[in-house]
Image (cartoon, rainbow, N blue to C red):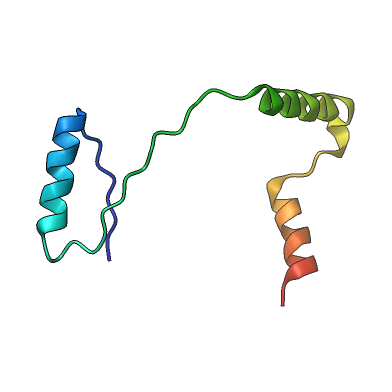
Length: 78
């Protein structure tokens, strides 16, 4: 099965497109995804600032993603 993402210019054309897709037998599923906001909430900003400050205080103790992944694999691999 192959999945595509299609961006439609207007609500009217979206309705038309969805109706066309749903009428075709080979189309298995049609879903609508609402756009995700790029704006961060106050809580998200606070969390990022906290993590950035932790990094600045402990820059020498930073692990690469490769190191973190190896530790997790070792700890949780079956």
